[in-house]
Length: 574
Image (cartoon, rainbow, N blue to C red; front, side):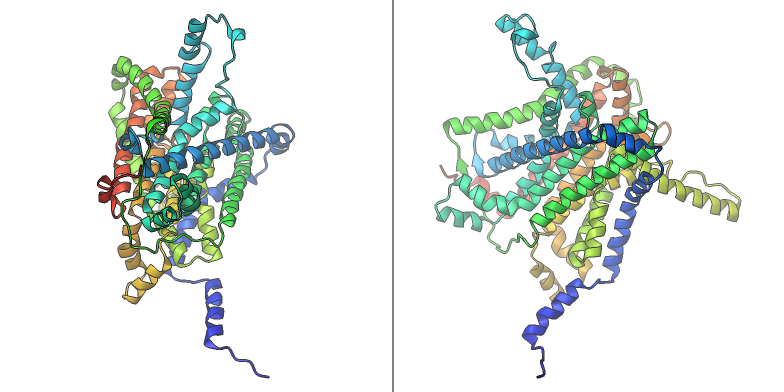
């Protein structure tokens, strides 16, 4: 008996084969080249980890490795859970509910994003320690004589580190969750209302599942930031992987041992990302309706409105107002000391480096995310996912990974120039700001790539097919169709990269040229000499640099949603 494939059977079969085939075109090649460029320092770190380490690794395994693993795991889980609850809850609260101060909290809840965690750790410890304002006031009020008369939680602990990091990292989740809630069509929420669901039940059954990709990306970014923190964990004496890496590198003088710990930490992050993608495998969230109106809103009366106001105010006060007020007090008293230095030059260096890195990271992140969308085979996805884990590598270790390839490139160019023209070229890359921008881009590409990948995943593939039928190629489709749809996410990604570059310290310390300082390195050097008051103006500038972009971003996210103008005229539901 002869068998033949009918069109109904043959088409799905050919489609499967086409999906499994490696599509060799300029977008695939370009995506792989960009991924290779970004992944080079990561490969250099792994190569360094494989070099002999004089039995340092065996010593770490026998002594502190287990403690590093458990402490880091507890820190990441605590920060991840805290940022997810606070960021998602406040995003839904200000998006769908009406309560006193809601218009201000729309953008004010983003302000802690501009505060480095180590600065908040310093201020909170100063206020909550035994000799601080809070405990001194408690003893004076209740007549307590010493610590034995009362109990007070220890701020310099793992719990204190989780609290501090959660207060400054929840805006990652808030940003992406709020953008996801605003992008949702009103139709799905109206269907939920017709079924008798209230605002909270609609949130858990409809809005939350639709926003899940963005929320997970935000939590992952917050967890990676917690993994890379050094100032807070050292100040609170919390033994995490990052603290161990610096200890092995600086105190044990073993770069290979530090790189081995960094490699283990990369394995943790890869496993975290793989588990998340496996959990949502086969799930897609598309917006297929064109009905964009003002989202249904609910008026919170009485105690509910008061509780919403207090919760939002407490987050803004602890995460931003407290450290900003302390720094402002110091800056007002010691500003002449800061201005007597090269303060203006430090400001320009920080702003220019951050802007260049933000543009590079957003451009490359969009290129990679769109390349994966066009040719999402295993090779392309694996390459881009590996290239985007630089956020999980400590800045100092990543700096070593940047120095090695750029140093080798400088030596190659110098050798060719000497041989051909008898003229040395010196350091063209590893000794210039190119190295810093390259390091920033590798370090923070996960911010832009993750944000844009989540945004592009919500654009239905039918729009690509419609653009192709109109004669548009991939580049024209990206420019005329996808770019306007993901504009809000582009701004979100750019802001995240810019603010983090302003705060980045260890990578800048290692890669900067001689006599080249930024605000972060200036504050670090003075704070290390116990002169934080004299550098308070510079620290306050780092915080202030993120305020205006945060406000503009919040307004742009709201305006980017069709139908936003109706929100001010639509009467809220009581």
